[in-house]
Length: 195
Image (cartoon, rainbow, N blue to C red):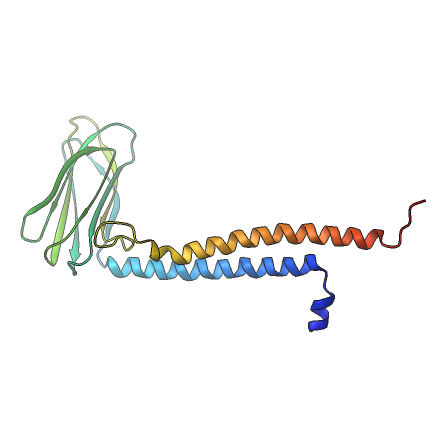
């Protein structure tokens, strides 16, 4: 076996390494994706995410059950229609206290530190008297945010490693093709003496 590998052209060897790098990157991407989705689902047992149409001067409600005060509660609202429709969001804790109250247009994002366990409510109101607002909303815990509201990059380690291996696989593929063509041309012209 080792003699067979030793006699193999160097271009083929590099192409085999390229294939192994691609395979490794796919395995790491898959493993990281399964792990990340597991963390996401675990942090959001009652995640509220949807696309809703809110009629003029009407409201839409969403709620989430919070079972830990150590995880930040994230609110993301994105208007999908391009018109500048004024919207208002209100987040209410289980005791009825208002934790967040903002008026915005197009996109809104905030994080809230829950102070008690229970059902938190999100109310989105369309303040425009004539136009219907189409919004996409997310109300839950984002697993890649730490307690300070900053992005925790360590959770993306598997993704970064997979990208590095994939890029290395592309480079090895290009080098392998170049070496294979060079070696083939050497073999083709070996023993040829120009006159």
